[in-house]
Amino acid sequence: MNGPVELSIADMILSLSLVAIAIGVSLLRGLGLVRTVLWGTFRTVVQLIAVGYLLHAIFTLDRPLPVVGLLCVMLAVAGWTATGNQPLPRIPLYPLCVWSLALGAGATLAVVGFLVGPRPWYDPRYLVPLGGIILGNAMNAAALGLERLHRELDQGRGRAEAVLALGGSPGQAAREAERQAVRAALIPVLNSMMVVGLVQLPGVMTGQILSGVDPLTAVRYQALVMFMLLSGNALSTALAVRAARGRYFTGAWQLRLPR
Image (tube, rainbow, N blue to C red):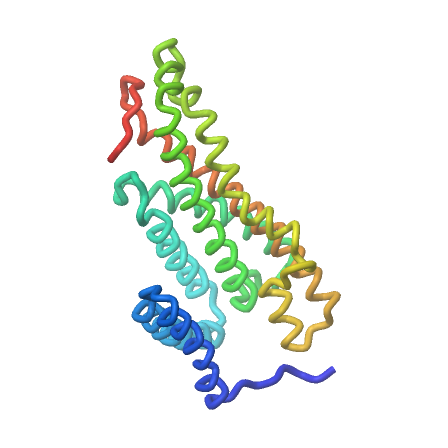
């Protein structure tokens, strides 16, 4: 089997024609996204080059501290991103989200690390990309769950206040809202699991096949990735929604909805 096909600088420059297609669609349809597309393209190139040099340095050092430090930075950025554009104030919500992501994604990564068994345990070739995949998806799921929790409590305010008036606790009053929030956050990963291999060949599998790995080996890794996404999303979202619930009730067990 041939090795991976190398992409030259010229090839990458020519790949910008794909960006030009998106710009053309925006211009023709009046979407007003030209500046956003250009800015996104610029950030993509700069960020990927920067992380490429950073990973090269971490791989060269071959020490656990830089690997753990990079994962902590990724966790901090994921928590900040997940709490953006949320109905709750960002500052008090941020540590709750970071803690939820740390527990949910961390537990999942620990199990995956045990199954994959890299030697040494902090091997950045495994820990960094797997941790990034788990955190990135858990971040999106937590953001969806937090937004849905607010919407459910807002739309079901009468029901929640009735439970409180009858002597129910905030946990009882928000139980249905929490359930719907976590359920909604898991829909994207569940949909992906339904069509993986039929409609979609995900990134891990595609990348390994392009790099010359046997397809059957790539399939096993992709199955592991799908399972870890489900676990990380479920744990992180459930914890984030549970932690955020307390911000919607006063010490006197009264519902408060931030505007």
